[in-house]
Structures are given as C-alpha cells and as structure tokens.
Image 1 (spheres, rainbow, N blue to C red):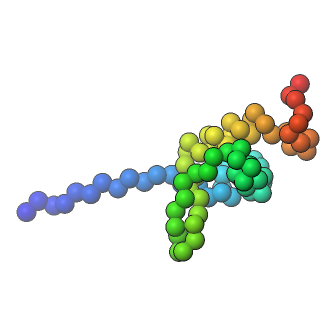
Image 2: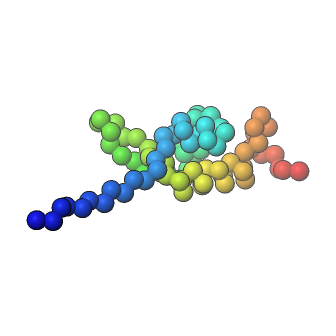
Image 3: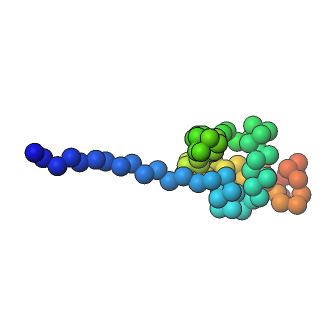
Length: 82
C-alpha cells in the first residue's frame, strides 16, 4: 500500500487592519474607501459565525495603487499633485 500524498495550498491572507498598516493608512480610511466603492471588496470567509475579509497579495497591491493615486494625508482628496 502506497502512502497518501496531500498537497496543501497556503495563500497569504491579511486582515483589514493589517492591510491598512502595511499601506500606511488608518483602518477607518480603508473601510471608508470600501464602503464608498472606491476599492472593490476582497473575498469574504465565515469564521466563527462572523463574516471576515481576507485580503490577498493582489488586493494589497490594489490598495497601494489607489492610495498612491488618490490620497493626500491632511489635505483631502480634492487637491491635485504638484
């Protein structure tokens, strides 16, 4: 009898708070962008009866690109870069 071989796929996943910290914004700012539809929702997963967001590497890149293009800390979003 041959031994069984299992392949385990591990995907990097970040919480909303971790993504905000990695990008350099507050969690509230990231949530505002999500609720306003400025950033698309990452995948969701049920965890202990709660629905949680699981951010992948591609999601993290999208948030960074959005921040670079649209975020001017302390000056609001209506100012143009000079």
